[in-house]
Image (cartoon, rainbow, N blue to C red; front, top):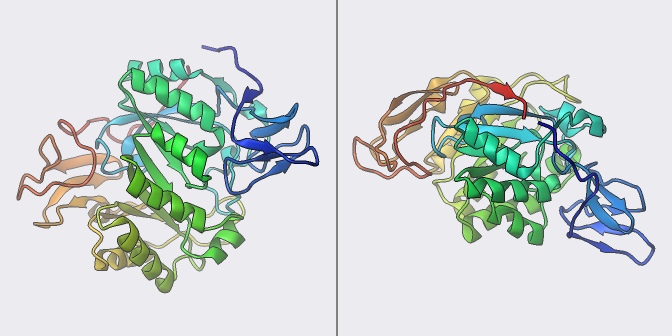
Amino acid sequence: MKTDIIENFPTKYWHRLEDGRVQCDVCPQHCTLREGKRGSCFVRKHHQGEIVLTSYGRSSGFCIDPIEKKPLNHFYPGTSVLSFGTAGCNLSCKFCQNWDISKSRQIDSLCDSALPEQLAKAALHYGCKSIAFTYNDPVIFLEYAIDSAIAAKAHGINSVAVSAGYICEQPREEFFRHMNAANIDLKGFSEQFYHKICHAHLSPVLETLVYLKNETNVWFEITNLLIPGENDDEGELNAMCHWIVENLGTEIPLHFSAFHPDFKMLDKEKTPLATLLKARAIALGYGMKYVYCGNVHDSASDSTYCPKCSNRVIERDWYELGQYDLDTNGYCQHCGYLIAGRFLGPKGDFGCRRIPIRL
């Protein structure tokens, strides 16, 4: 169902400069724009003296996914999530796996539309426990995501942000106030990698992770896409795992994900399973309790094990759940240890389906 869309939706995180330009204050790119110009994200624009959002209520498509695909392994396992995104991105990662969406410079590519209340009702209609802002970073369509999260909450639906965490302090506080869960994409662990490959900086992402841990009740997990020869150095992996344990603790799930050649990095080989398993061993060696290998078919490294008794408590085969030895509150049925995460009731049975829908 089509809706009336506000073409230039008003926003508040910006300020005027003396030379007539307007500076966007949503993310650390701090784009300074003259009338009619768009930011690096493409969807925020200088319009009549202020910054407006041009993608409110517009989407590149809707799909019902397993929550494990976000990836979130400890947030109501086996349940379904209504996923959607818009266009554009505030990072320029050369390896982007969703470049056709995140690098889109055509509003026409946003062929589907839905206002927040419609999204919430659609999630309810299809039996989804959550909605996910994904495919491209929701930070850049912050107003749309927040309004959708508010509508979802009113219908008992959770909101999930799949984000690179590249956001400034004030909008970060407002944005995550409305999120129940997040997967933060930690691209690498060196300023050189962020600058060279993503045209961004590392420190704002680390600040977001620390903020989520210390200042919110948002359940979050971390993904690190390993690119051969770029961010898979053992020294970098050791530094990253050490930082996570020191600043976030040992119970934050960490997903090492396999790279597949795409966008501007077609010359790179896909990540070998051995590289992912090595990274996983490093993280486990630092005491991290929940470490996974993703984008590969390896049930052993994608399953959850009890940190106390070492028994497998959640078996995963891609996004299909098998053996499930947790009680309704997330306690290990073998030894009674409480697995970190959000668990309520039995496991979901959505499985590995992917169901595109139209609203």
